[in-house]
Image 1 (cartoon, helix red, strand yellow):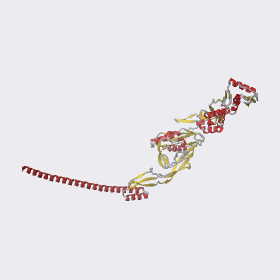
Image 2: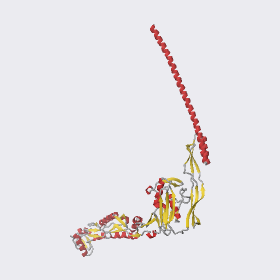
Image 3: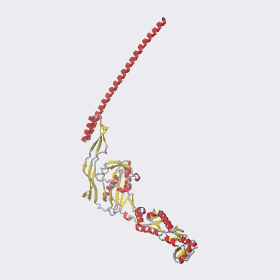
Amino acid sequence: MKKWLLAGGLTAGIVFGGLFLSGTDAQAAQRIADNVYIGSVDVSGMDGSQAAAAIADYAQQTGERTITLTSGERTLTVKASELGLSADAGDSVDAAMNYGKKGNLLERYRENQNIDSGKKKEFTLGATVDAEKVRKFLTDNEEALVDEPVDGTLKHENGTFTFVAGKEGHSLDIDASVAAVSDFAATDQANTADTIKLVTRVKKPRGTAEELSQVKDLLGTFSTNYSTSTAARKQNVANGESKISGTVLYPGDKFSVAKTLNPMTAENGYAQAPSYENGTTVMTYGGGICQVSTTLYNAVIRAELKVLKRYNHSMMVHYVQPSEDAAIAGNIKDFQFENDQKYPIFIEGSADGSTITFSIYGKETRDPSRSVDFESETTDTVKYKTAFKADSSQPVGVVSRTSDIPHDGLKAVLWKIVKENGKQVSRTQFNSSVYRATDATYTVGTKSDSAEATAAMQSAIATGDLSKVQTAAAKWKNAASESEKEEDEKKEETEEKKDEKKTDTKKDEKDDKSKSGKDSGKDTKKVSDKTSDSKKK
């Protein structure tokens, strides 16, 4: 029980609230009473610095807390520190320190009664939020927090169009959502909530049944053949067609073929097949996909939609006439067009392993007597060149082509021809294209034991004439062959002489041995006769 003493009664104490406290009571005055909390942090018996430290520890833990943001049907989890959320005790530490010690006599009496009875006292532990940090986080992660609406579309089966309703989406109201996070911080005192509902706006889909019912007329169609393609190239053509077919473009919509078809990877359904790169043919994923783009291009221009970007190939392709192609290559070349009509259009494609077709449907607004056609014209031809590379590691007689099949380059234009009632009323240049030639490169062998043959081949190479190089190669290859034949014959003669000499030597040795054997027999007989005579004697 606290002892309240008059000032001057004792000297070992402190003055608190206008009263003089004993030493024991003075120490208690510097500490927070029992059963006192700041938010959910128990600060009972702590001094001011200890309570501040406890709140700081709690604030750090608060920063690690997981918050769930909801936006429509989307959710995103985030650490509180990423939103700039942190615990804020404000004046609560001072209030906790003064609980039961300051105020008028009646207030202190009631507070001390609560303390003595063990009644819990909780002071506010609020939260702070960094609004700019919240705004940046929401902006950076907006894509994950919104749902784009799904526009109404069409199905075309058995010549009949069927309407397919769209689906609503939602956008994020950034300003209102920042305020929602701030409100959460202000009211989340007991640390019980962990979800913040962001503020969204409904985004309506485009395309009503009435609007899309206008799509019924064929505006333009075009087909190309790919029946001779490899299986891999056929796969690429069919895969590309499937990514475009079924597209609905509303008035003002722009379409990018490269964006629609990329990335050119196995994971995206493509195989490796031949394609053009820097004037040569190489194997790449998506090889042949330009035939998809080209076929669509020709359907688009016949529907008279607005072409935004179109590039020709570096070299001629076989499936359309010059200037009728539309190449795509990564982010460098793309075919883009816009629906500049007043009504939606529907793109339908098909690829059966032999023919790829694109057809564009919409509402026909052109005069029935009007027709459009396109005509390719070659305006110049660039002859390919022949180049030779001497190779001293290859024998004379070798002439091999090391480039693609050579062909001429050319310049071409595409004319747009408009007729009314069968009579031409305009002929305008629609585009222009330049296709590079593919030069012929040959490797020519110059290796020979004959200096004359090597010199002759080098002279033939200097002419730049393939026929002269081939003639020289054949001549000096034969000469080299004759030389080799004579050398082989000489070697054979030398070997034969060596064999004859060896044979004669062996014969002489045999004769010598035979003769030696006969003489030896005679001597033996003589000895035998002498022995016999001796015995007789």
